[in-house]
Image (cartoon, rainbow, N blue to C red; front, top):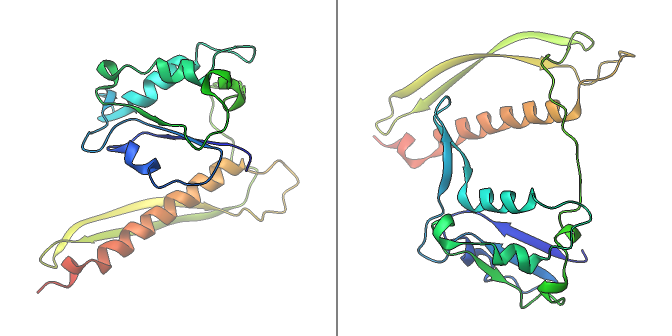
Length: 199
């Protein structure tokens, strides 16, 4: 690597960059030891937080700049307001060789991507599909009884299809596989925790 910027948004985030000793690493975090990191707002339709405060205010700053911007990382870090973030952001720059007021934000955030929203779904009819399967998930409670049992239908897509048409977008395949792996990991953890063996 040449230079790395770590941005950490979690409770007690600033403690995570304390053990770094490699050169040319710059790090910033959302909260000090003993502090929580808070959400900015939630979506009442799905009932969960949409974005955390530290990430929200970073995004707010970054959305105001473009590729020709002369804003520096020092400007970004100076924009952090503990009253708005509800915690104390920190910056570790002793391992970084360049002065922060000389480092352009676009040195690290230089990618410009256009997002085009469409009102239609992906057409999956051009790939081979394995018939719907049922996945049963059972969680074991503290006393060994079934805590929750659910059945979910899912479709597996044959990514090795020899179809001459365009394949399913890779990100969709990756996210599907990742979701299945997380489900299996959670299932495995539930069967291997000490509570599962309690009598």
